[in-house]
Amino acid sequence: MPDTSTPTRRAPELSLTLANPSPTPVLDRPVSTPMDPVHRGDVPWSTTARPSHRSSSFDEPVPLPAPRGPVSGALIDLLSGDAEASVDLRLLRWRGDPTQATTDDDLQLALWLAYEQHYRGLSGVDDRWEWHPELVWARRRWEQHLLDGLRSETDDLASWDGLDPTSGRARVQAVLNELASADVEPSLSKFLMREATSRQFGEFLIHRSLYHLKEADPHTWAIPRLSGSVKAAMVTIQADEYGGGAMPAMHAQLFRTLLMDWDLHDTYGHYLDHVPGVTLLATNLISMFGLHRRWRGALVGHLAMFEMTSSVPNGRYARGHRRLGGGEEAALFFDEHVVADSVHDQIALHDLAGGLADHEPQLVDDIIFGARCAAYADAAFARHVFDRWGTGVSSLRRPVDLGTGVAS
Image (cartoon, rainbow, N blue to C red):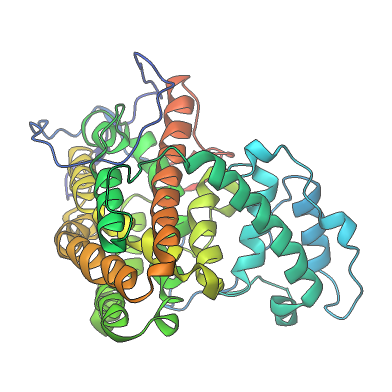
């Protein structure tokens, strides 16, 4: 935070008035927007102790969270036990509404816990559960529910009508460009830039922490599944995500600095219990695509859409951060994405997605599907946040005291 005698942040009560809160927000495109004046607000910054931050650069396994339904409850009980014990698969069958699969709290938490065993792991859980055949079988059923839901939600997102169907590269680039240039109001990044309170901006960071503290890891699963110039393009992008091998420049590390600047916990997975299923969807999508070679095309399409829609929103986030009194060192997370992703977007569109369409034309539809899923996940998250803020309530499952970063 800037060094002032009375540190402050603008933190009025949650309020948001939308002319029509129901439209589905989609991804942003560059537009000329006048800057708002910088101000520090009128509510004193919390005088309570900051949360204790990590003294180590190494992540610890994530503690098991509270269950959110019968499936996640049965899974948590299972993971707490013996990995050699028999599994009653009937308890792990999700019987929810298929139309709610993409955002259902119970299903999304079950998937997140199953996937997390391939990353930092779960505290107190035997590592042998990672590839337990019966648990993998159950996870495949959950993934099928998710895929069915995604297909029903994304079929109408961009098309290639009128394009030469024999040109895979042309189809991929046309659809990705259409998705990336869509600009339907209300825009979450514009709201965070111009109007969000400190409380709302802090909630946004809490949501994002579930992905950004493992940023790049899920997409990196693609590297051993690609080859030639397509692999080179992927490595070029990922190398920047990992700071070129310098730990302080890793994007996940930059995000930790941002969290600390906002007096939020920077511990990996700390806010798992606080975020809804629609937040977990964002990471679950990439994990699902990354852990299956057959979905390598979707993983590439997802990353391409990520990169093509990153630079402009991050510029807006940076303005919102500074407007609310955020520190310059912390703003580097946003500034870095503005610079890096303005280059990555061209590599991702032409060399990565376009290159894969040339070399493996049978994956064209998968590349497009992955890009559509990325667009849908962003829109679903924005819709959730606006719907909650529009009624004056927190967008989190469990509110957080944003003066201390601890649960309220």
